[in-house]
Length: 270
Image 1 (spheres, rainbow, N blue to C red):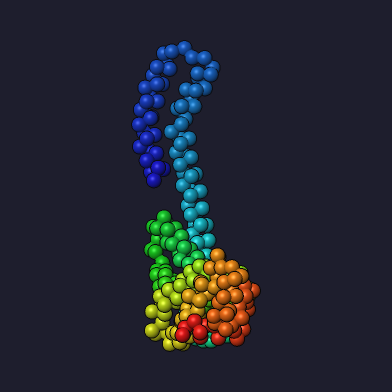
Image 2 (tube, rainbow, N blue to C red; image 1 turned 90 degrees about the vertical axis):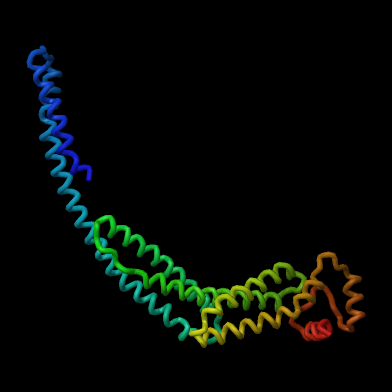
């Protein structure tokens, strides 16, 4: 755009150069001033040649850049097709809860790549606009990414729940943070319920989400007991009193996976 304005600017300056030459014709000049005079007189031609050279360089670089853009977009097309296929077939390939962690990792990987592809598509479109080219329609990437979000959310929270449950049930009871436990539980309940609303047309994942929901609800029954038993101020005498009252031997290092806990949970609910 600036190059288009150069000829008019040079023409205006040429008028000033003509006036300057008239003065130089009657004013004695030193050698350095003579050099400056002829340098100024040559500027219109110098600028014209520079503009021509710059235009040629821009045209060459533009052609090279567009060629690179074309190659990148061609590779991008194949790349997106691969991930979109993986995303759309994900629910059919992950139909059990046998390896939740692995499924969650795969879902997270796909979701991350879909979002990266959305940003890459925007970059390609911005380049196309810069070169006055017709914008390629990449809207399908955003659509697939949005639709896949529910899968990613479900599997991430299902894995988070299973991992936390394993720690709570088989870990040291006196290491459990009841408040954190409740917060994690509620977060999983909330996120999985939200994701499940998108599974009306995906019965296999809907069924899995219902199973996880049942597991969460079953564990929630024990939260009041867990909070009571993990009160920071509870003392050994309290454990003795609770054990005496309930007829169940309790201690701070209780293994929450043993039969006593199930008996205690039943007693508590009564």
